[in-house]
Length: 451
Image (cartoon, rainbow, N blue to C red; front, side, top):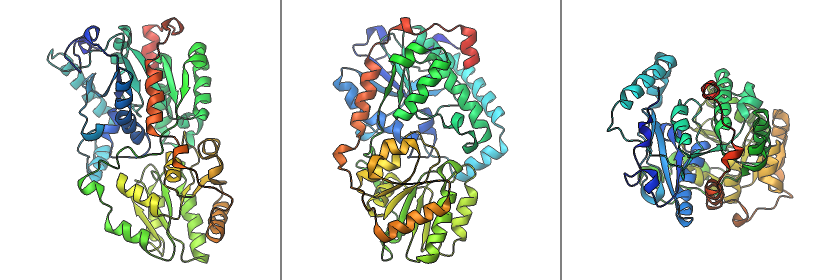
């Protein structure tokens, strides 16, 4: 049973929501705080928190980042410049051993037991959700069991918003771990069944969102309460970086500066969906005819990524012609954008393609896979290629080496989306009242099934 004690604590003043002067937008950051990743969805979440706080204040509201722990949502600290304070990262070896040796079912049971024990403590802090509040779910919290807390918040009038990044586990199950599709489908049904509004990161995802809502019998939400925002091209954490994470490691600086021409750059977790296997093969063919060609790969090794990482290590030019960095900081990523030859983004499926707009903002030419969302995001400013064929990609790389980005004009940074603009859209959508008459009541048994 979920405790209703979560409604007793006010994150800001210690009072209940009825005494609060400002509406509050609570932003779930649970997975972002738990993962040592600064790109993709975690970058979106951190950017929403940083820029959304200022935008919310301008609209007479308060934005509060929260995380779900011990059966309830609790506020999380925000550091200088509105940045989330990350948790101490778990060492990769420790994380790998934990996943191998500790069954996931045991971890979940232990978490549920700990949550029940914590719920019995009246002094335990939690958010006091109220009828003027909004809970926004922008994170990849697919496995979180927070539906009881969310239903309790909605019962007192709190509205639920969902940031929909993509439907890749449903549309392309072959590109994700086998269990991910079932987990994502469960999360998708649970969120879209409860959502009062949805914010999609692209028109491509918005169309898919409306289709899923219609399939769930939520025609009014699909018609009136699905909005679109564009992820920003500007970094959210570059300027405030201090200390070691603000420095660019010497090996990376030397690799970018070495040779007669700069290296090609690719960014993203090494996994089948990102398609680095075809890129490495295309680069092998290019390097055989043009030894001056080089490749920089920035991204951690993910699901089924070990073989690609091994292929890079086996490459004859490993270290001089090809370099893999698995833990690049924001400062290092930005340095790479400004000193690379071109970004190569060969993904087979995306909801947006954040590196495309980040690279364009840095003035870097972009070679991107020819999929609909990349056409939407990159427009006429990118060179597109068929991502399914290494021969085509190799030919595209050779053509770029000979002629550059011919026929492609750079885009002015002020024409690209910014995180302030994204935050404005998110905040104004969250603060727009939703007619609860258009939100069908869902039986408790159905909610439990969906959740």
